[in-house]
Length: 287
Image (cartoon, rainbow, N blue to C red; front, side, top):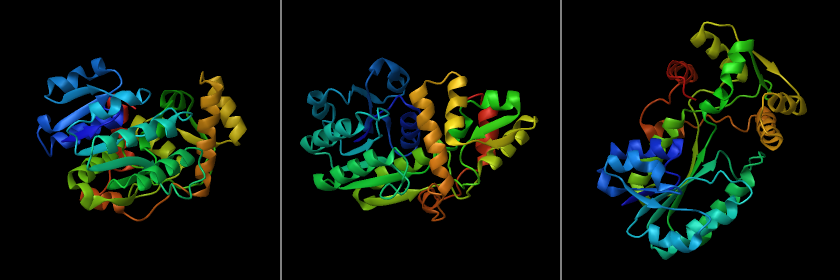
C-alpha cells in the first residue's frame, strides 16, 4: 500500500493523480492534517487518514499497513527537522518498507536556506536503516509565477537572480517522478538529482510571460535587499519576503542548474517546457 503525506497540498494531490494511473485507489492512503480537505480524494476511493506532523504519538497508527511512503517535506521551516524525525520514527515503528523523501537539488552542497533541513532529513533516513530514496527536486517553474498578475500589469518581473540559470520543472513532473519511484520501491533507492531538461534565466521567464499573455514583460534584476522590500511593498510579510529574496539571490550562482537529465529518464519522456507551463498556467489562471 502507498501513502502520501501532505496529500491535500499541490504536490501531494498531483502525486496521487499519478499513482492512480499506476494502481487502484484501494492501494493509496492520503495522509492529511485536516482530512476534511481530502473529501474529493475519498470520493475517488482513496483512503484518508489524519496525519499531523506535530502529533508524533499518532503517526505510527496512521501508517499501519503502509509499505511505501512518500514523505513530502514540511513547509514549517522552523520545525521541519523535528517533524521529519517524528515521521521517520513512526515509519520504522510501523515497519514501512520504503520511504521516498522530497529533498532539494544538490542538498549536500546547496547554499540556499532550505538546504540544512533537507541535509538533516537525509541523514536521519540513512540512520534509520529503512530503504529510501532522496528525491532532490529542483525548483518548480510555478514558483516563478507567484505574483505574475502584478508582473504583467506593470510589465516587469522582479528578482535577484541575475543571469543565473535554473533547470526548473513543472510540479506535475516532479509528482510523476515521485509516483514512479514509489512504484519501483527499494529498487529505486538512492539519490535522484531531479531537474528540468532545459535551463532558463528569469529573462526567459519574462519572455515566456510576454509570449503567453501578449503583453510585454521584462526582467529587472535587483539587489537582494531591494527585492525583499519590493515584495514587502506588494503585501508579503517581511520574513517571507526576506526568505524569497534570499532564494532568488542564491540561485544566481547556478546551484539550481542541472544537466543530468535524470528527471526525464525517470519519466521516460522530455520534461514539460517553461513555455508550456507558463502558457497552461495563464490559460487556467492557476499558479
